[in-house]
Length: 253
Image (cartoon, helix red, strand yellow):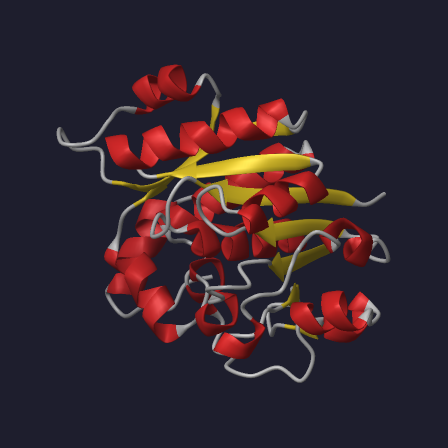
């Protein structure tokens, strides 16, 4: 049965697209049929994260031209299905008021990468979703803004699955996980650590969960995907040793 999850944030730059992509791939690796949709029609960048720059058919074509959404599905080398938005200015005024209808033919779990904030497009995405996952960084402006999105989704009778804290460095200059949970009145689904490996994966346009399955962020995404799917995830044995050997130039599985 179709399940639509909107990944939302209170502001841009918190890593929402990065999390949407890696979470979707993790769920796919667990055997879930997943399609990820780039609904940030005014500032699309999901394709750029994955190394794509042009698409013959985009989300805008589906909504404005009443095309079958399955014609806009592209398959990433990881096996993930994705529906992109155009990156040019000519398509940035597309209304998402018909998004739910457009997604109707999809039978998969649908993850929507929503625009940040509380624009009309974001409200349309929330309206189209069954559930939301809120993304924040461990800093006050990000938390304050995501709280507004969570409250708005609750007013729209949408279920918030929880909060994912991205770019966590666990130092004294960021708000603690327990404090974020109190501030948002929502439980924490996962924390994704800050690291050079994540920056490398974005630079190489290769999702970290594909580029480095043993990376701490990759394991966090697998735990998150398993939690959402009601599965138990047991990480590989001797992860620290395998990382050490790999960093020493020794190939490990």
